[in-house]
Image (tube, one colour):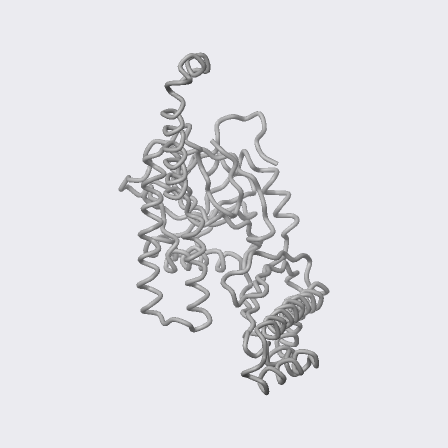
Length: 276
Length: 102
């Protein structure tokens, strides 16, 4: 048994009761996509993971888990599977405020799902209240190193002078002069990167409810952020993203995604254990 | 090996138990690598980004995704074998009720 951080992963069991629970071929399990507030049975159509299974709701009081039937398997995080998970959440999000479950969460039976709703009722209710009418946007910003260096050389007199000097006296220019140039450029790049990121975050903070910086991916990314935005300000947020990306279009590439369910702003610790 | 027998047999077992300790440590670090899926997940995120920014095409993505999934499955197998448990298997709410959640 262990605590599950939602929506970051079902990290069930720490070896205490770890026997094999992978293979079972019947479809008695329930794949859970998200939790919503709704007290009537609802069918979202044949859009579920594992080849278009029917997506419907399992209830406890006014809470509902959005599920589809599944064999008891571990789902690989392939693009196909992740997109299926996302598609369901996007569909549900059009009408409801959702608490997204992490990818791959499978319960053994409908009773186990109701039990989840029952035992976590208060936490779900609190979070649903807080997330009412809020959506998430993702923003990854990548820079083009060469263009940033070129820009720095243009703007920074000291670097330009040193570089000219090295180019002019290619034969005689010392190793140390080159080292110094390298250090200066590196320092200026870091400074420029920080300046871009601060400027972008400052601009977006004014139209977002909250923001969060995640670890950058690869060596070209300078920020990997998530923003929680009120639905009523979605258009405004879009406009600010467009303006800021235009401002930096010569050196930066913006990857703007959403709306997503609030993956980065919900952190409910579920006490789950492996079902054997 | 107990403390007492270590002390009693120290002159004789010293180097031997030292070797054992080293082997044990190597074994553990190999196991840690076998069951750690963090670098694999990072590779997957890098791959997705590469596709998004157009560094690779769809065919390349599909091919490399298959490799990554294979590595993930291997880690899962090792976790099962070493009794570590896996993310993503079937779960249920823990039966203890005293502190349900926060």
